[in-house]
Structures are given as structure tokens and as C-alpha cells.
Image 1 (cartoon, helix red, strand yellow):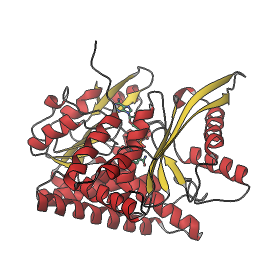
Image 2 (tube, protein in one colour):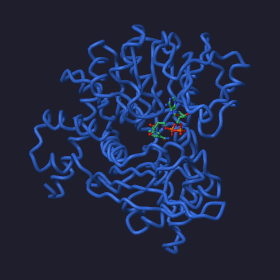
Image 3 (tube, rainbow, N blue to C red):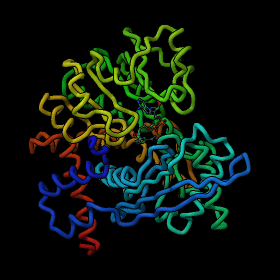
Image 4 (tube, protein in one colour):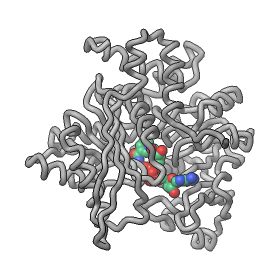
Length: 428
Ligand code: NAD
């Protein structure tokens, strides 16, 4: 028998169990929080362009809503599983709580590969997803948002279907919409920028100037690209990024030792975050195997693609120079690999803190839509920085005071807040 496939929900539950011990949670509170409150599993029939009907498997998991209506992304991915959705829903609950926004955690997904779907098929899939869930989601129940391979256009189709079914306008129902159609300025940048706010604060603690650092990044999608942009504005140098190559069905890393040119590489990238390998090589980038991003001799690593990318198998390939890792993706590091990194003294900004910028801006989008008054991009970025920096400092102070890892400290704060909300409501 081969090794058991990686299960992100088991990871999320292991992380939860160790913090439940630290917090001394009683059994009923533990049982409530280590599983989702509600799950929806459904089939979405979609009429394909060729005329036949194809069935897609969809999910929505609402992990906990004690602190407010649920929020959380929808992923379109061929390897989506219910346990991956459960894990991300749980992380979402902790994420909203650690940055102290009044929302609960949910996540959704569809098993599909949008690379192989036309625009019309994607629209019908989005509308079908909403039709299956229209009674179980909504602005005061559960508000979806984009995630891997979904974006503003998907959100707008979903909003339109929801409003058609409920026969009224609910602009605060879905977030990550296009700007001008109820979207918040700055949402596209928010997650990547938030990752860099935490990098900036971590570097202050390490007493290193951003301008003296280099970084390698896994992914070149929404999160990665905006992280690269802001990090370069701070003076940092990105030497390597990686992405999935749909034609070759493998990942590649692209390196320029003196630093990538963001605008140039961005112009060679499709809307799935895939880089054109021929054009990249013509522009002087070295094309390396996908795992090479982790092996670069850099100060900072930013995994910003998928789960389970840093594990006991590849962690030995990591350069000794790495001092800081900011987890842009959800669940990129297995617990065993995380322990090895901690033993090596690497400063880790855990995923649900590092990538909280997205949901913070989703919350801002709800606030703006509900007030029907929209803020400028500068106002959004100012408020985002304030929230991210405040949360980082709170977590880092607790980590120092109680000699905890950043992940455990963030979990102590967030799980503690959610447990208090459940107890105060009389649930446990
Ligand atoms: P995206 O679809 O825009 O980009 C994903 C990127 O990862 C692409 O460049 C793709 O080519 C690359 N990729 C996929 N498989 C890969 C592999 N095996 N090796 C290397 N690269 C690979 O997605 P995104 O929105 O940037 O999300 C990235 C991660 O960040 C996910 O874990 C997501 O859950 C998390 N996240 C996203 C947001 C958000 O606002 N978009 C918020 C919080 C967390």
C-alpha cells in the first residue's frame, strides 16, 4: 500500500486539538468546534456548449457562525475534495476571528477544471451552484467570495442568479465583485498586500530591512502577483516564482537571479496565473522544475498556490538562508514540516493570519454595499494595513509572552474568541 493521501481536514483538526489543549476547552466546546455546523453536498447539471448535460459535484461547508454570518471563498479545481473544503472552512472561522471581524467561516468548491470550460459553461456552473444553495446562503447567513480559479466575473454571475431567485437587490450578498458593480476598490490586491504587511512587520522584528532581502514565491495567481508588487515596492527582490503549466500538466519555476521584472512576467501570464513558458524563456527566465521555488537561496519564502506544498519530503531541500515564511496559500505546510521549520528558527506567519487581507476586504465590501457608499482605494488600503498590522502585533506579542509559535498564538486568540462567542450564546 502507498502512503495515505494528504488530508487537509486532518491537519486542521490536529492544529485545533493542540490549541484546544492549551486553552483547556471543555469536551462539548471541543466537539462543536472541531467539526462544521452545516454541510451542503450537491450535484449541478450544466448544459455544455456541445448540447449534452454534464454533472458537477459542488459543496458548501459552514464551519461556525457564532461571531456573525459566514464568509468564505469558492474554489473551482479538478482535485477539490470535501475534506479540503472542510479544512478551509475551519481555517476561515479562525481567520475572521484572529483579525477580529464579525464574520464566521465557510468555504465552497466545485470539482471542475475551468481551463476546459467555455465562458458560457462557467456562467451556467456559477448559476447552478447558486440555485442549489439559494435558501441556505445570503447576506445575513453566508456570503461567498472568490478563491482559486474563480474571480469577479464568477461572483457577479452568482449575485445575479441569487437576486433573480429572491427578486430583490442584495449587493452585500457576495464579495469580490467587479469594481463598479458593488465590488470594493482594492479587493484584487488585498490578499497579496496583506501578506506583505505581515512580511514587513516580521522583518521589523527580525531587524532586517526589506530592501536587503530576496524572496521566492510559489504561484503567480491573484495572491502571489499582488504580493510580488507590494514587496518590490518595499525594495525587496523576487528571484523566483512558480506556476502550474496546463499544457504540460506539471508545475515550473521561473528564475532570474537578479530579480524578476514584474510587469514583464505579468504580461506573459494568463488569467489562471499560468506563465507562457516559451515567452518567459525568450525573455531570459530560467525554466526549472516546479519544486525549485523552495530550493532558492533566498531570505523569504511565500507559498501562494495550494495546500500540502511544504512537507517532510521536500523540506530538506530548503536553503539554510531562509529566515521567514509567510503562508499566502491556505494550508501549504504540513504540521510535521511546520515543526521542522520552527526547530530551525524560521519565523512563520501562519496562513490564516498572513492571507487574511482578502476576507478583511470582503468585510469592507459588505460594509460598503450595505451602506451603499464606496470608499477610495487609498482608504481601503489604509484600513487594510491597520487591521493586518494590528492583528500581527497582537499575535506576535502573545507568541513572545507565552513562548508559542506564531501559529499557536494566532490559534489561541482566534479559537478563544470563537469559543467565547459559542459559550456566550449558550451553545455549549
Ligand atoms: P489563483 O487561481 O489566482 O492562482 C493560483 C496560482 O497557483 C496560479 O499561478 C497557479 O498556476 C499556481 N499553481 C497551481 N498549482 C500549482 C503547483 N502545483 N505548483 C506551483 N504553482 C501552482 O489563486 P489565488 O486566489 O492566488 O489563491 C492562491 C492561494 O491563496 C490558495 O491557497 C487560496 O486558497 C489562498 N487564498 C486566496 C485568497 C484570495 O483572495 N484569492 C484569499 C485567501 C487565501
